[in-house]
Amino acid sequence: MDVSPTDPAVVERARKRIAWRLLPFLFLLYIIAFLDRMNVGAAALQMPGDLGFNDKVVGLGAGMFFIGYLVLEIPGALIAERWSARRWIARIMISWGIITALMAFIHTARQFYLVRFLVGAAEAGFFPAVIVYVSHWFRYQDRAKAIAVFYAANPLSYVIGSPLAGLLLGITWLGLRGWRWLFILEGIPAVVFGVITIFYLTDWPRAANWLRPDERDWINSELEKEKLAKQKVRSYTIWQAFSQRDVILLTLSYFCATTGGYGISFWLPSILKRLSGQSDIRVTLFAALPYLAGFVMQQLNGWHSDKTSERRWHTAFPIFLCGLILLLAVIFGSNLVVAVTLFTLVGASYFAFHPCFWAVPTAFLGESAAAASIGLINSLGNLGGFVGPLMMGYLVSRTHSFTAGLLYLVGSLCLSGILMLAVGAGRRALPLPSEAVTS
Image 1: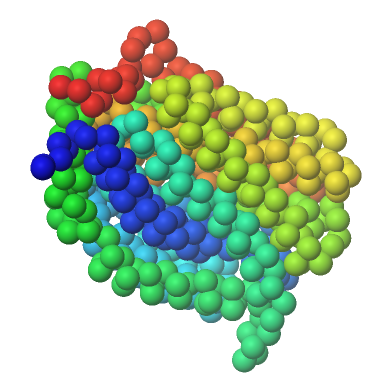
Image 2 (image 1 turned 45 degrees about the horizontal axis):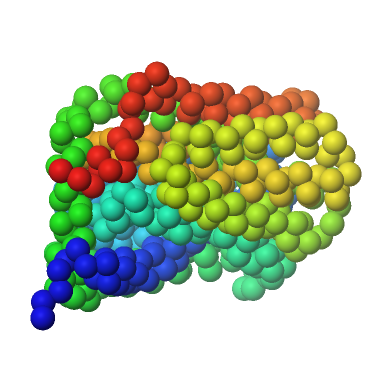
């Protein structure tokens, strides 16, 4: 007897098969991406002394990644939607892996700026391509949980990367110091998995021979109904989406949040090093704790957001909490144990907002408009990754203290929360889950 595509057994089987096939692999790719993006923070424990860089140079170089990121982010998102997310993700990974390894051979500040810019340009489009890819496979009700699993790689990359970086910093091979080997050895996996991506991922459910026919029918039907529902609620061209009030608010909110997040994450090893005077390996272990806590809270917040069908407060509240706890770290963080505890709570609250935030654009924008808007939000928003480390470096150089820079990050995080609460305020800007899946 034939089984209806709406049979609960088919639905559950399809959801599990899709999740287990795609999410672990996407998670691994994002681990690699963040190892390569943020290893410069660990390298900053050695590189400035070897190359004669001051705090201002290091902060500017760290932020140059996001200038390059801005250049190709929106085109990359559109290519993923209109051409092939699978091939585009593979191209991105191979490119950034090669350029990351080139970081090992820099000697001047200009070379540092140039290679960081090129790494950012090479990686541009990866994140929106994955968000677009997730929207091709997961319906609205499952999207925050799916993004939470994928985005778990963000904090866990630090949990893995911090102690790994500490070990690599302690080696000297072939006359090259540990920070140089850090870039070489962490660039290679991106190239390898970029090649694997071409053969492993499938662009659309209709081409997935690893799904049973009834499973393919169900997911295709669900996504098509969601598409039609969004067209009935509202329909935007790409340029209309860019000028849409909520897209602008989301971009500004994300910019302020990433200013705070990257300002903290890049400078945290240096803050703990100067506070404790401990070895590089111990400092990197301390620095991993906020990201472990962030992983746990991220999953819980994404799960609860899907359960309650609420996005805005699940995004804004963790950002506000992050700013408040960071303020407490500034006031009471002169003791190492207190500082590590408070920065751990900062990480827990900061990473919690991401899955709910990225479920918002695909809730009220469809296809190319959503892809381009995600690219816009991520590219302009990630300029906060330029501003945060740069302002921290500038203020540390001027005041010879981390206090002023951290207070700047506190203000940025609080402003992000306010902007997020303004999304859809006073009107129903975000469709309910029932609207996203019914015609």
